[in-house]
Image (tube, rainbow, N blue to C red; front, side, top):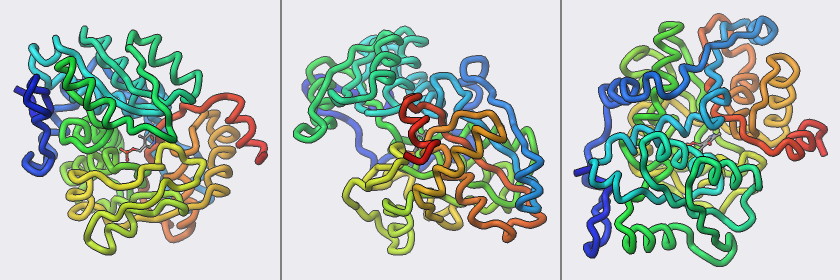
Length: 338
Ligand SMILES: *Cc1c(COP(=O)(O)O)cnc(C)c1O
């Protein structure tokens, strides 16, 4: 029986403290489960960026992944690892963003029912996409209700397994397959830039680096306004902050997950921060130079690489683009600097 499953009448069995930390082998196993299901996104390069930095930069564009972000990888891996009985009872998740669509799509592909708890004011595009994948959406009031408590009570009432967005070994191992593919395609790197919200993506990517490019320095990137992981790494304990005001809505998490943090402490070299203005510039740069629509959070990694500038000279550098889901009206506003 999976470790995240619900035992009806017995509360949740999820106890993050008692699960073993995932390893590189878990990322490899996740890659096998995802083969032929997730897109193997390409590796992209830009001569103009290489010239700007005097470096060789390799982009992994997960904005081109199914449902528009890397989150499909972790959700599909986690759902695949549920027992047939648990899958038959269905899953529940809460999210205002990409995790909702990732769980909904994974559930549909695996023939499993999904309930997603989303704020009443979630973007219409995200709501429509989640429902379009066949999930039941339960609304909540962003300013008055606790989505985790709502998801938990649905899990208990209906016997559904709760699928967390980042704080679970199966989720983060799935996210790491993005970097695994990058290393497989281009070989070892000197540096890898990865955005950090709750830390699922970067911790999985760091495991992939450990397996395939052990000398690679993995750099996490947070918005200036919400540098909780930077603070946590310096203090050696998980700091909790108020919800930061930033355009990087995928990195507005208030506290890094327990599993991600344990791996970040061991495997991540440093955390950099960038401003919203730098994110806007990166977003324009992607549109103009690479013809890519990248959401603000997906711009964190490039913004940090450009901030390092010539310190990257002569290096082989990886940049994970985490996703591209942004309302077009909002995108136009952000590009024009409004
Ligand atoms: C969820 C998400 C992130 C943050 O990922 P974590 O695993 O929570 O660190 C970054 N970018 C996008 C596009 C996301 O959907």
